[in-house]
Length: 459
Ligand code: ADP
Image 1: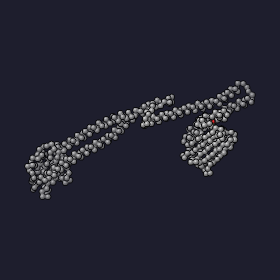
Image 2 (image 1 turned 90 degrees about the vertical axis):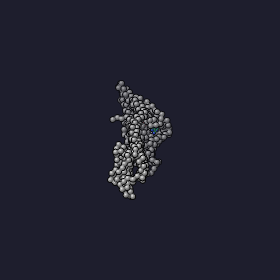
Image 3 (image 1 turned 180 degrees about the vertical axis):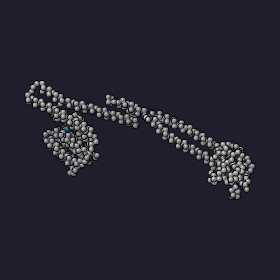
Image 4 (image 1 turned 180 degrees about the horizontal axis):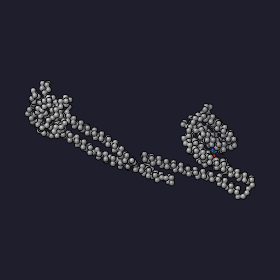
């Protein structure tokens, strides 16, 4: 069953309050009961003390110390809070009793007499507290004096208290439940507004935001969290759109060249040399497109291949071999330098690290004069680091952030016709992120660049 949140809050609070109130009310009733009974028992004890010295049993006969007083005493009539008295022999046979008892007798209980305690019972229709004390004659027990005091007033008080408590108990719970429901409803009103607004936001109006409350409470924090999520989503969507449009644009250029070249070729018969030149131009366009598609595929693979498995790798041997391999491929010497004399171990994904360094080293060669110095350096400060240093064209400081964006190429690279897709550093950045490697660059226009990879403690 789908119970609303405010309903659940109200119900839970009501349950807890019901439990607390029932315990408190029970305690109030028990304390009142205990106090009332104790007071009656005290009065009964006073009566016991008084009558113990006034009534005796001598050889089976009752003797009163103050007979006249006894006859005028309260227990002759039915008063508001009367005392009932009965004298019995050892077997419990009644010998005399106060007139206010009428036809009734008090209960005989030698065990209670021994325990010297009072008990509650009924005589006729009346409820009383009773005591039973032995009557002694010269140290020998000859019977019992039974004394009882009416419990009616106290019972009425206790019953009234119980009724009031039983009546206000459900009243408290019902009013608490209703006010809790109302207050809970009021408190979650902003949440309902937030979900209403969030439901209306789609891909088409991703620029809209949930109205902020301006407070720093939980609702304010939730609103800000949702808005910042929307902001990130919007940016991601924009990047996605930008990427798709850039990719189509980049592919369109070589395609247009290819189409133009082929159109020119079929217009009229050409000489063998002309055919060769045009086909070569077409092949360059095809190479450019296939290089770009390779890079796009590589980028897509990085994005899909989250949670790369890391393994321990010894950097010095690995980098030395890599430097040799790139030297052969690029036909340009890569100098390897190790700043420490002992092996350096890191936990990393070897293939990703290789791809990162391959891109950085190829760029270092590409953007340097032929024969320019390219260094692959490894060292350890607090953690291991790798640097790719070149003394090539360098990058102007305003482009240092942008070079990692997909398809971004510095105009100079375009002007000088240096081949490239603008995707290499975007791939490097993604791979570094996936491998938890910190990537940074420092560069000076005309002097050269240094790309640095810092392994953190967990990498
Ligand atoms: P690509 O090299 O294919 O153009 P990258 O993403 O690898 O694409 O590089 C982006 C841009 O950053 C390059 O076009 C170039 O202008 C600049 N760049 C990258 N590496 C270097 C470097 N070592 N020296 C100078 N410029 C560089």
